[in-house]
Length: 622
Image 1 (cartoon, rainbow, N blue to C red):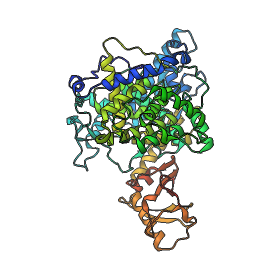
Image 2: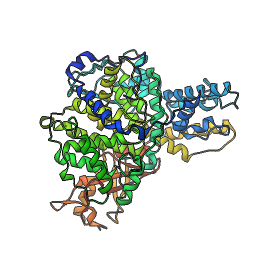
Image 3: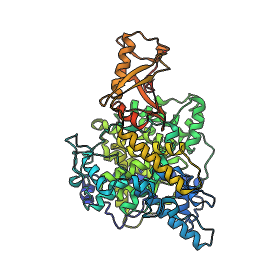
Image 4: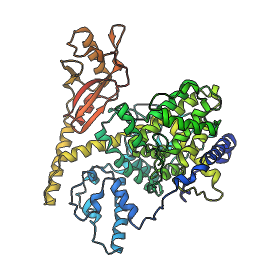
């Protein structure tokens, strides 16, 4: 268990009755898998020696954090007062997290007699001056608490935060409209942080429902690559703020350098694998080898009893690896001749052999530390942010793996692999890595092993929730885009603040005078030459517009540009084959949830275009 930190003194990670859980959820599979890993890697220890890991100097960790958070200009000697638009998007708890790191970095610089860095008061404003933009805009703690309690008053099944109890099988609301750190701050201030109870039954877990607001739900993949690049920095700041509020230290490793052998498949960095694969199949997001392994197991291995748990022959697995290295890209490898337990062994070997852990060397300690958060909902909040922080290749590969593991669990009646079995087998492969030191505090083995397996179990069971981009992060992306497009380079600070106030007042007036209805044009340039005029009111949703488009397409005989882009079913266009995108304005490109209310979206981004496109997940007709 390479990077499983000790628990925080403020937390009780196994407060959810670990003794009972250990009796009901055995860990034999975990330790058996650890032994298999050790046996399979004994002959290769010399090939992957760990490079020397230098101890970080004082302030170095904070400097790296500020750089990764997109705030490196704050520690430079040449930064101007307003050259970072990201600061204008931060909540109070996020700004406090940045300020703590900057304070620590500043103290270390002063002790080293280096040139002074900028004072935090120049960045976030002087308390009491009335000019700190975000403090004026942020709702008060009482209002936040009111929002937390009344966010879903229209849905009678919603539960009050003050009386939430983590009961297995019960559905709870997972609020994504308000920053997680702000929610935690309000709950802690009110001293009614809900208690979780560790689930004794491996297959009975609390159900969480993401309430759809007026703007719908955004999934990973719904945002453009341009906007998704902003998400990791925002998620890192929010995760740090959440850990600060909960009293946890967010520790990150420095990436270790490994001596790797000259191979094309196993032991090759994900980026390199994808670059090679994209030469054969453009737009490949998951390594072709992993896709082949998962496809083979899905076709013939899901019904195999003990799949993933029962180890294949190490000699055969090593031989198969060599054959794959030689024949995979030529298409000569015969998958139908491979035993399914050997394929599962190859799958786990592929994950372990990555030069850097799939969860990344930097954030593997943070993933492991999630077990230390007492409350289940906050554990999931932290996991959601960590997944958003992952590099895109790692995130896409992890998603493909978790989707497969979910399919294994769904066939439990045949393969005898329930959620806990799968989690205990896969945890060592995700959390143990040859490039990281394996130091386990004496007497902590069982606790850390159970915690790691529990993290994997959460990632498998709650993956739909974890691959969602929170509404508050999308709102911050919009605000960041707006700030970047409204850069004012004025030396007079008073003039800059006056302009900020004028724009804030203007936005407030425009919001208050929002039109109750609006006629807009929806384009479908790849499908039609004509555009669709839509009358928006408070009840108009994306799904309504797509149905209207489908109806007009069939009845009015519009001039179709490319009929092969439309999937027909019983001589009628299938509405589920079409998606509506929001393009431009304060967003790059955003695939809209069918339940998004378009008049609300128009008021938030009036300068965007709306374009209908074919759903890329549906097959095209040629």
